[in-house]
Amino acid sequence: MNIRIGTRRRVTLAAGLFTAAVLTVAATQSSSAASTLGAQAAQSGRYFGTAVANYKLSDGTYSGILDREFNMITPENEMKWDTTEPSRGSFNFGPADSIVSHAQAHGQRMRGHTLVWHSQLPSWVSSISDANTLRSVMNNHITQEMSHYKGKIYAWDVVNEAFADGSSNHRSSVFQNVLGNGFIEEAFKTARSVDSSAKLCYNDYNIEDWNAAKTQGVYNMVKDFKSRGVPIDCVGFQSHFGTGGPPSNFQTTLSNFAALGVDVQITELDIAQASSTNYSNTVRACMNVSRCTGITVWGIRDSDSWRSGDSPLLFDNNGNKKAAYSAVLSALGG
Ligand code: 9MR
Image (cartoon, rainbow, N blue to C red; front, side):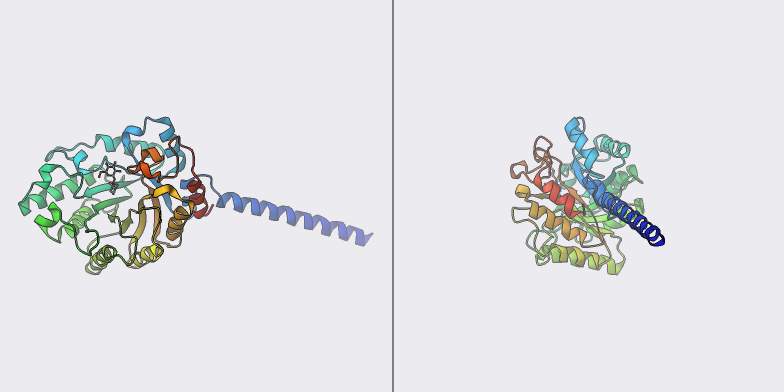
């Protein structure tokens, strides 16, 4: 009798523990497997973003995917100089404002792109040859645009693509040619004085391979800025990859930059033919570096891409998830 009661108690206790264990496993699984890119990235404190074109926000398929999957937005063109200051001192923030409103309404954060870049630069700027004029035009552009968006931007691409391909030197541009090497740090100092809450980033492409001369040039600049107290908080690796995917040492590059004391982000990811392996290797490189704070793909559907012929994104032309989508979701930890 006593034994039977004891047995029954033990059976009841064991059943209770088993139920608790099942519930615990279920709870753990539901918190570690989110069903969207943004929610999954958020579980490791990261974000998952996309480039957005303002004129596409009225396309329901486009904005449906945007608001379901992404929690960071980079305006694809709307914050660039040719749109925001088409003539000297006359600013147009309308198109970017509408992206920012969309983001605020949907709980998405913003990456500002971009303040100082040699491309999509109006000819009234590229034709300036006097250093004092160009310095004041550049600083005024940074000041006006950052002030307009003060408090609304997570990180700014303060300077974009200032290094030349295949070398460790700055590329030729009106800023480089008229102001000299110091234009980059001047831009960062001005930016810090305008909005001290936004993270200030240097952004470039072809700096993912640790052995590339261009990567070394940017690394040495960041190291120099850090040693002299020039304000810089982050480096964006655009990551426009070909069919070979990311370089095998991409994670080394990310962690070496992070070791300088900056955050790193993948800012414009697209990969020709979007193989699952290439996407998942890229995401894993970021996941393995604690200061890699987020990943942004450069568009939603293949048809939205600047290189649509390469079908490089995570959604097909109809907005269906491609195989690479699942690879990314699972590399994010799902
Ligand atoms: O995707 C952008 C495309 O719509 C523009 O026509 C192009 C003009 O230069 O810029 C594209 O975005 C670029 C980004 O701003 C900076 N890195 C390279 C991107 C692809 O060209």
